[in-house]
Image 1 (tube, rainbow, N blue to C red):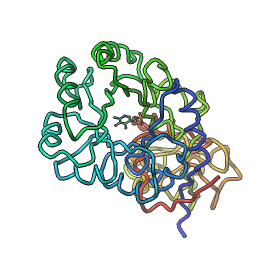
Image 2: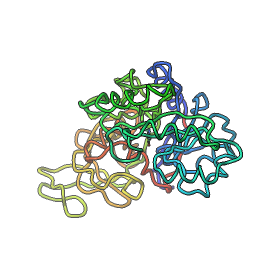
Image 3: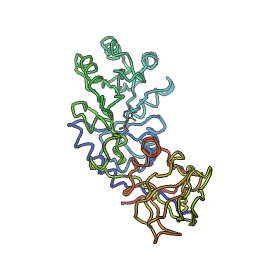
Image 4: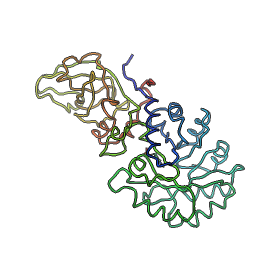
Length: 355
Ligand SMILES: *Cc1c(COP(=O)(O)O)cnc(C)c1O
């Protein structure tokens, strides 16, 4: 059997949820489980986050699956309804949709569900992606309050720079200025805001990435917040090459040996979800020791430096990311973010649940 596998720790996920709660300043916690729980599996997330106050997903299908699995907590739909045809299911399953576009308000007004919905009324406070104009908050809140299809309202916004020096206050201040007049609960914080800005927590927080043990910040590691990596990507060395000085490795011969050296070939490539743009020097661990990748990542394989690892060879275990090699370090080397690597874990990689 091809030796690659992903290990997913439900214990780490449950631990990270407790870390989120400790930072949440009393807010209730939606575990964000979109994108197959950031690659960790919706059903595993349901079990690991059983203590969450709610779940947040993108699609009606994900929400329906959670209900089938027995989830009784509130489930929010982060982008709300994609069409008027979703209202009935939304009401049947007691889902809490976001309203971020006038069209969605119109659908609910024209076809109010028999069982009114709790909704998140989302305002744009500067990100300029989804959200209704903050300047219109008074009229919009009044309009939604009057809808027979609406049972309750939580006000919502989303931060563009919670992970950066610019922070959240440039958005939070105008948002709160507008919403405080309505005496309604509010929700704004993602992982980065939750970890650094307790005053941005409101009634409900929406952590995603941190629950999986990765850091939303470029300047702080997950371990600094006591977060534990939930996913490891592991494989083995399936070939060893001895290079002479001047010889190259892999497609494009992107790495050339300066002197004689041993190279390990690992059964993991971009078709497994490892980033093709990870350059020579990306951190990796072989037989428990830190080393680096060499040359270009191919579809099913990548190469690693075995210099200084005389005991490593055929069959040696390799950790692509996990407890020894933070997924954030691999993401940084590949000029992306850990979100992308976790979500991209390929379906062909067998998953093993670990403690
Ligand atoms: C994905 C998402 C989150 C979670 O963000 P993280 O950075 O993963 O914590 C929160 N809120 C909304 C609206 C989202 O779409």
